[in-house]
Image (cartoon, rainbow, N blue to C red; front, side, top):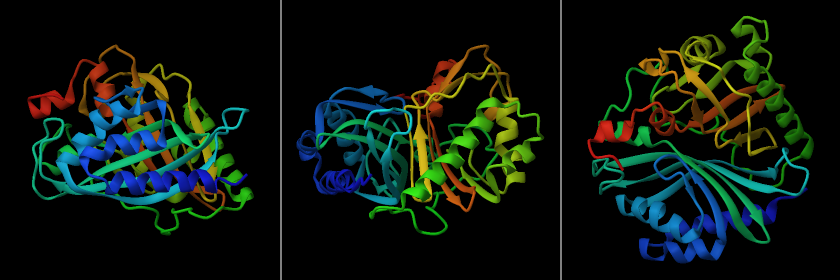
Length: 332
């Protein structure tokens, strides 16, 4: 299948959305999105069911706060959702929304300096319109750029995260189908390992089945990024597994691959109950939802890079801690 028409639609949507002023955002949203658009975002935005509300609640305030906003895309791809039998074409992009942080957003105080909001979006296209969107964004990362400390010490490194090491993530042209199938198969194999947590192998050996030794895991603010299987096991995967119990099965809404890239999202992907220690937080006895987007790059028969978006504000709010309110003193 070719997904070029759907890609072009999203590229045109981005061009108009990114170059329009705040007052015309609503018009652009209505032009490209269905009237019953199903938009999923991170806390405090959550689920919205109309293009008008997305314009008013998300895009207009963001454009007002991050002036001269520009989109810096690192990965762009499209594909058929492998989780459903009927035609379901999605276009995904990942990168940063960059601007001058000139006005308060979500009670985060402006710096009047450059700021980067990490984002990843999945758009489902039907009859020439965007009918569903998952728009995930790393709010704690922006908070940290403003001098705030929403969480304790990270197990990984904090930074503005780059795109693929190969600089090959912008798949504007159609890709060989066989390459996408190979990427999807590798992702599916990894998910079957990750979702079990009981493969019987030592963690590093389990990871080595689907990950290259020099893998990079680009995690969200509050957890951070880590490099190599050994450090990933020590700085995230191991602490994460030991910090939770009663992990549910994995449930994704969309999963696809194109060329050497692929990814998925859920809302939530899974639930788990913290037993204490994860992100220096105590046990709560409460199961919490993990809303996640994962984007991957494959090289050969192994995964080599992984960009991860986790709605940590939503998760900790379910545990009784409003991180945004606690850190800014004002909430959303």
